[in-house]
Amino acid sequence: MTTTRLLVLQPGEGDPPGRLGDWLADAGADLHLVRPGIDGLPDDLKQYQGVVCLGGGMSAWDDDKHPWLADVRALLAGCVRDHTPLLAICLGAQLLAAATGGRVEKGAEGPEAGVLLVAKRDLGWSDPLFAEVPMTPDVVQFHSDAITLLPPGAELLAASPKYPNQAFRLGGHAYAVQFHIETTPEMVLDWARSHPDTAALARPGTFTEEALAEAHERLEETWRPFAERFLALVRGELEPAVTSARRLPVV
Image 1 (spheres, one colour):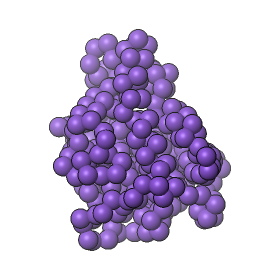
Image 2 (image 1 turned 180 degrees about the vertical axis):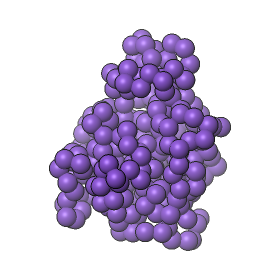
Image 3 (image 1 turned 30 degrees about the vertical axis):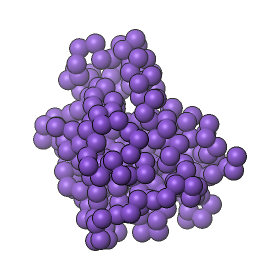
Image 4 (image 1 turned 120 degrees about the vertical axis):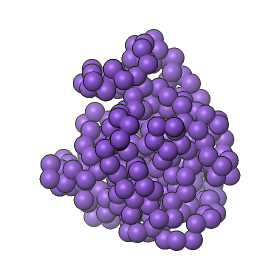
């Protein structure tokens, strides 16, 4: 199996690649993990075939506290411009939206927390990555900010009643999900302990070892194949989506 080199950006200490990293490595990816606030960013992406951007506790525009966020936004916008395959998760999705003309704000309906459902939208059924995802897959939610306006040219792939912009695609190569697919039960328990006010908004019994272990079995059934399809897209083994929107995103 040919090794494919992926740049994995980890903005927050508490959100490592988790099981997503395992799934990509199992499928043959060589992961180069970078923490932008500590390691900086590579000068260019020539040595990588694709990019994954994970989550973190900061906001997409928290430049005063984390000035390196501007560089991450520029890198993600460059992925869209250059058709570099990209998978952006939670904060990563918000950074991508902010970098390409969308809007990210404090969620007016309050945080989303727990193992919840999202609903695939019509375009998802023909999307190379989302077509095989169930109509209402389980996801992990743990966020206070929300993408309130998609970037120009973005195509919505999944939604939820509370916050509609749950997953979107820019062009044929850049994907963003507001929710988490990378977590382990231990990661989610750590978030719940660190943010008890947010965790208290979840359904009773959500944040127990038993419930999270069971939920992550279901999550793996859906999102491991999704991760494998992303890697196939990176390798050129999966044809990118034919986009219906003709406007270019702002980069």
